[in-house]
Image (cartoon, rainbow, N blue to C red; front, side, top):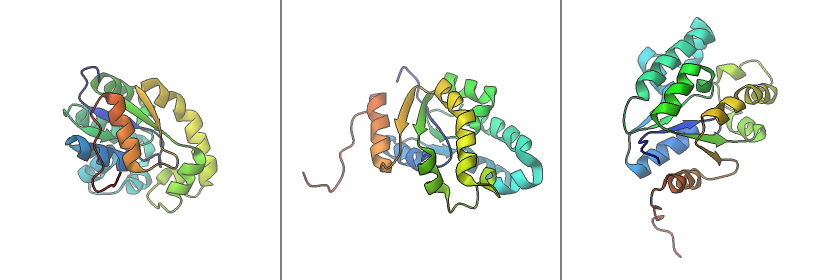
Length: 181
């Protein structure tokens, strides 16, 4: 892992960053943080409310502040919001302070995973699949720019994705408990 102790997960909404990050942190016995959840904790309101009342620019400012602070905690596993890579300051923090894993997923899989979510302000009152394609086109080069590792999540179990990350980072495999050979 080249001396980096932090693991940062980036990728589009619905790629599994929070679920994989939580599982990975548990396997590695490291603290887990989610930048969106941290913003909600700090403000006492959900992300959708921040977007509605303060707009996306203010949310992105709050996101930059959260990522600046969270990336200084060591060690940790951090799941970032899908748009965290937009700000150059965030990309710099991620690249310099940890090992960045880009969780890739198809737009079709994203749409399926977020279809019932009401807390996705960028998908409010729009055709979700069209908007997801637009966001992917804009952000994919930024995810690739910061990534030390790319891991596909389409049609995969959380534990399989976490184990692939652990293997790539040089951690020993965790045997599955209760599974017969």
